[in-house]
Every structure is written in C-alpha cells, then in structure tokens.
Length: 303
Image (cartoon, rainbow, N blue to C red; front, side):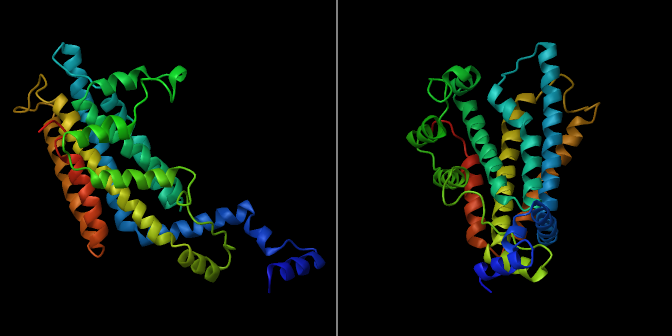
C-alpha cells in the first residue's frame, strides 16, 4: 500500500496515519530503548573496556592532581599549563557522555563530543611545546570570539607548525577532517533517519540494516577508544611528568599513591591491548586508528 493510499484509508477510519505515528515521541522513545538494547548486547565487550579505561584514566588524573596541589602548596617548582589542566579536568564529563550517547543509539551526536576531545587533546599537547597557545587560550573572551588574535586554529597554530618541523601527521589530519564533516552541517553529519514503528520487530531489524547503525556505532566506539589511547599518553607523558618527584617521594610511598598509579597504568595498557584484539577482523580500520595514536605519541619538538 502506498503512503497516499494508507493516509486516505486512515482518514476514512478516523485513525492517525502510519507515517504520523512514526514521528510520535513515544514511538521514538520506544525505538531508542529497543535499539539501545541491541547496541548494548552487540558491543558489550567494547563498551565494557571503554568504561573501564575511562574509570582508570580519571583516577590517574585524580592522583596527579593531588600531587600537583601538594607541590604548589609547598612552593615547589611546577610548570602550570592551563590548557592541559582544563583538557584533563574536563575529560571525565566528555568521556562519560560519549558512551552514554552511543548506548542510546545517538552515534551521530557522540561524534560531536569526540571532536571536542580530539581537538582539545591536540591543542593541549602542542601547548606543552609552544606556551603561546596557553596564552591565547586563556585570553580568549567573548569580545574577540572568532576574530581576534587569541583565537586558536588547530590547522594554523598546530598542524601547520608540526608540518614545518617535519612531523608526520597525515592520519591526525584525516581524522580531524572526518570529525569536522561529522560536526558541521554536511551530508555526513549526524546519522540516518530511521523512525520505524518500534512495536514491529521485523521493521526495526530491517531499518537497522538499511541505515547501517551497527557499522556507524562500531566505528564511533573505535574512534572513542583511539581518543582514550591518546588521552592516556597525555595524562602519563605530560600531566604525570609535572606531578613527578613530589615531596613524599616514590620509594617509601607512605600513602600508596605510587602503587595505585602503577596498577592503573598497567590496567590501561592491558585494556587497550584487549580492545585492539577485538578489532582484529578489521585490519585496515585498526591500522588507521593505531596510526593516529602513533602520530600523537611522537615527540612534537624540533628534530
């Protein structure tokens, strides 16, 4: 039956048409709940690993933040970087919101948050090599938003500078381009409209296949895992370095923070290895994500 025939028949019987029912919020809520269970079951291992990584990394940030606070109170040398601190202290909220969106089938919206994590991580790391970025970031205000000298451009202020000193960043550039396409109003942003009648299980399954929800969801989970691997380097290699050699020392470790830090770092490494073991059947995709991590972890200083 065509849409026109169905509409005429529904009008004659005093009923709401099938298309209108699809756009009813209660139907959309039912779809989210039904398909959310599918996502949760289909990708349970990947979601579990990601949640564990977020938990471990957040605890590491807490350990290093405490050590940094002690250094500051004692008047010990500490090189504060406002961009790095802001990026990592916002990490728990950004990272937790992303799997929540994915598990509720909003992988399109999750990519918007992923772009925030990606860009803030890149800028935070490069600001460790170029302190002027921190000055620009801190002086940014509403009066010169988008047009003043304090605006930070990822392309101009980071990627172009890395290109000049001969750093290989092709994968990072490609990922950034893809994330921009997924964020701006392009043909690639958000996700395909489904709106099946959620009470009809066969129709839901048909639309899941037609709109490639599983593929988009898995790709977004892999992207988030890549960002977590990058964030782990940022935490340990930069934030942790600033917190190192605090007044209690690591040898005696009277509060046990060194032991907790060591266990958390080892757990993060194991979880990352376990996740990449799950994507072994997607070698090309895995290679691309690993390349992003490699380019991010390399030294960005002059050769």
